Amino acid sequence: MVSAYTSIVFASVFLAILFTLHFLKRELDPSWRMISEYEIGRFGWMMRLAFFCWGASVLALLITIWPYLQPISGTISRWWFIFIVIALFGAGIFKTDPITDNTRSLVNTIHKICGTIVILTFPIAATLAVRSLLHNPLWAAYQGFLIFGIVLAWIGVVAYFATIIISRIKDPKAGEAGHAPVYMGWPNRFNVVTYILWIIIAAVIALQL
Image (cartoon, rainbow, N blue to C red; front, top):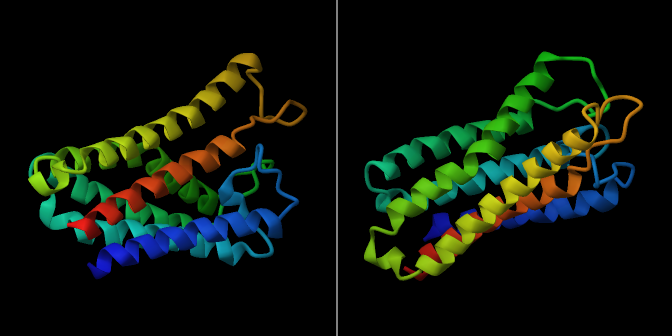
């Protein structure tokens, strides 16, 4: 399927851009700076492009698996993924502010809302999609890979938020000026990579069908 290949290509481009930016923007410490901050300043267009690629990969995958998604969970996941695609494009359009900047702006707020939608709800949409796909005998043959991808995605989001919670417990003011930063940079990257891997796994399985 062309859409499955397209999904894999866009997902791979996202990973390639994100990896490259770690070398192009060494001033951003990946241990506590979020990937969204690569949108700021020089080479910012690359991170924006990366978000667009991520959104395109989800959209292409959705087109691929759409015929296999059955009600009720399948229908919910379809529209949920469309919502996530919109959020990913929104994250690319609306640039974030530095995590060290405490001022509030409408653009930054919109970016944060888009990011929250993706980070918080992607595993839920993916789980609903897998639940629906497993009712199909063709997809059920790859149950182990699908479940592995879902578990990986949930580990990613749990690890990310666990880092934030633990940091706040140790220091309620962590992340504020004059206090230790919240070391959520690497968990943020791990979280994002698990979502991309789920997309690739699902697209590769679709090609086998």
